[in-house]
Image (cartoon, rainbow, N blue to C red; front, side, top):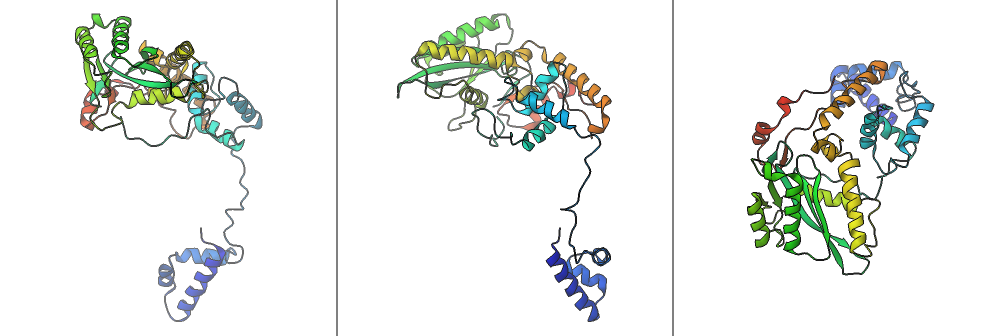
Length: 363
């Protein structure tokens, strides 16, 4: 967009060059505009009023949301269960209830118009990160990730220790414990209990357990238990901080939950009660963005494909009822295939990915 002062200056320079014998087309080309542009400026008072597009009054699209629809959408976004949830999770959760109000972008526009687009909850704005290790999970109980994090106590300098084991494919927390000390015996007990709960004794191929290079996770007693269970240990590369990114992301989610006590836990029992509540929320209620906004428990049980198919049907019906509000295909609700942990080569990922076997749920 050229300002009116620049228009007048260009028009004067072109007129001066043209009066001196230069061709009008070449003079306009040197000035960086088209000859037709100069003609339009002169014919439509473009050198007097300037560009009228910023002040243009445009009618609202016929398929835009009505004021009642916008009020209803805003009311849903402000319900207690959605007050700390972004539109990217609100829409799939409503879809699972058979309700379609609007797309994620429409939710965001309505919230932005009402000054409600601040980051919800205690989480900070996400930063771009490189993709997460050379293990590939095509089903549950193939690759596990585990780690330990510190939970603050009300007494400064005192910490509780949270151990978690995550199934890479489903993102479900399959094992967890909270202890007052960091000791390899706690890790041994957690691995043994998780293996029993997941029934890996009946599996022909035992899972891989990936962790960092912490002394607790690499202790001799832990290695002995993994060997007895048939679980293959895997460790992050030296001096690489994000080789266990899924576990680190899980801890980040845990510590930015609204109910996480900022001032620390009063005692070990309080830490365990909070951890039990977080694990239940994460596994059962949380709609995970990495698995098409189904819960980890649903994906672990193999229910995600039916849920995503139902969402696809709902979106198709919504588009048929009001096609003017859809400029392209419906959202792709295809199930996520293979999950990789720190992939090295794209060709390796494609060889194991299930994308060729998954029907695209977008119409």
